[in-house]
Amino acid sequence: MGSRVYTSPMRVEPAVKALRPSELAGMAGVSTDTLRHYERKGLLRAARSANGYREYLPDALARVRLVQHALWVGFTLDELASFLRVRDRGDAPCRQVRALAARKLEELEARIRSLRHLRNELLELLSDWDARLAGTGKDGKAWLLETLAVDVPLRREHRHEFGGKK
Image 1 (cartoon, helix red, strand yellow):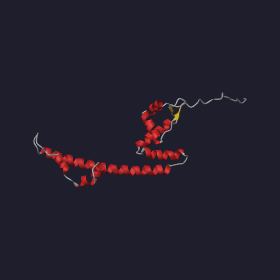
Image 2 (cartoon, rainbow, N blue to C red):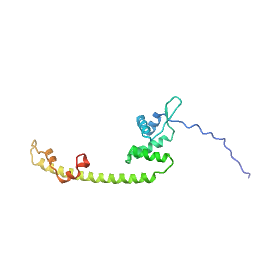
Image 3 (spheres, rainbow, N blue to C red):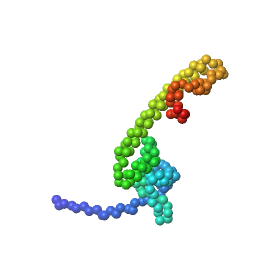
Image 4 (cartoon, rainbow, N blue to C red):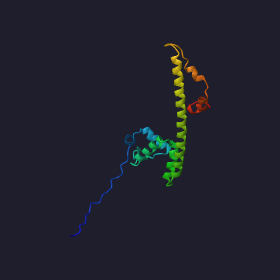
């Protein structure tokens, strides 16, 4: 059998289709205001068409999704912008990204501990209030809110974590 040579017609890549802000916003599930905000923060770049309209390259969708996920795990826009500037220059901010994520995890763990303390305090408070209510008549005053004025050690210790002064 002879060999066969298969040839295919040359494929010409179509010009990359730029996305209008409304298209990108719709695909990413964000508003066009969010896209403009990301631009101002340096997280996203838009080109300008001949008539002056904003246009985004298709890879902008991946960038917006990256930003959204980074926000969800706790990075701020400013932190992310700093890392992306480094990356866009061709450098690798990987170790800094990892170190910051580790700090964010430590902060989250501390907040979880604080929330557990708050949960325990609320459980104790509700138990106390149930006992007070059981000792009053149907329309009797149990003075529940006044019990919050008592400066118990647990509340004093964690007050700053819930919006109060330490």
